[in-house]
Length: 241
Image (tube, rainbow, N blue to C red):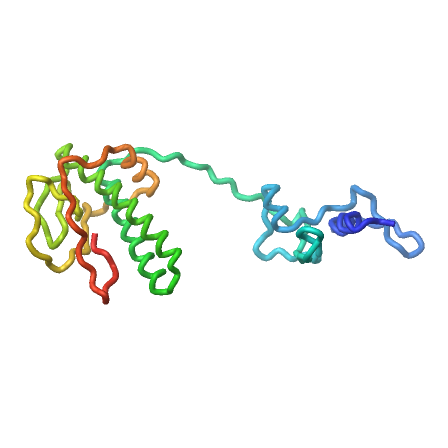
């Protein structure tokens, strides 16, 4: 008598579409080379294959899982010949890019995370909101390191404050930051928040991983003090830096 595992394996094969059976007493028989394997989507993925978007399953199989076979799982299986090879993507390693371009890229990415955190918070998805908030803070730290280095290189200069933000400009860029040069005077009062940073016309936003790679090796800012972030009203949860 066949065991349950033998039966499952038997169900995992099907005659090839081109196979011609040998009929004996009205029953069709196939040789091993006339059969092809059936695979689940998961198994196809392990083999570097994928089921096409409109792939038709041949049948469904059920197996017991868990300790002692506590529950059954039903899944679809497909002809392995109908599966297609997964597209192979070539990973391009990160590279160093222009310092100011990198600052602008992480600043834009931080703002996207800021907006994502607000959206998730408003939808009561507090875990996702926290993750976006932490990602935003990490990007702003990279931005500050980049601004400090650009000031040191003479590519950016401190241009004053607006509200609780310092303004840095140079080479067509304008950045906002809570970094304030030690010798500068802190603003005495808040002003309406500034939400728009600028870059030279026709500038292209690079890959974020290139921007992060450029900024991650920079030292922590020296010669600066930190302003407290701009106040945020209850009706506008978004942060302004």
